[in-house]
Length: 134
Image 1: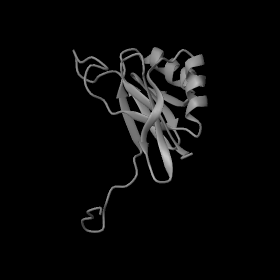
Image 2: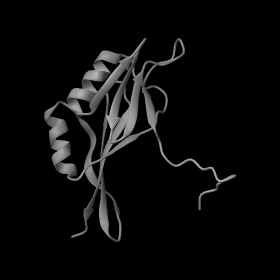
Image 3: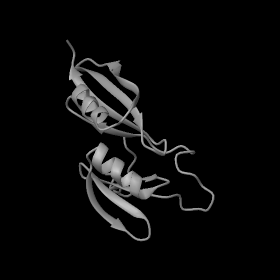
Image 4: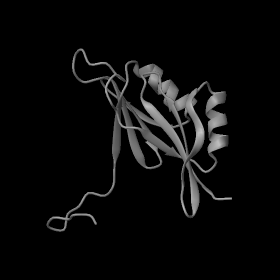
């Protein structure tokens, strides 16, 4: 049960940020390899994409000396209908999977599939899909 104080509770994520070391290379990867819809760039060095209604912000680390991909970032799980077709499409664009699509859980109504890959800065990304049990 969600705790709600004074009738207020958070529910919807509006934006997720990932740190990257090379913004133009990251824009090319997320736009061209992953096929995310590019929204806009904002000075001095931020780029934004649409992930099904949630905005993804890519930017270099904010503090001097910080390195993208060397500290833990959130994992982005991209939901797809056909994980094998999605993985094949990404592989044809040069994406290499650390863990190819595999079943991670057998649920009563479906099998939960995931496949994991990284961007050029080491940020962990994943495909996920629920397929009917056979």
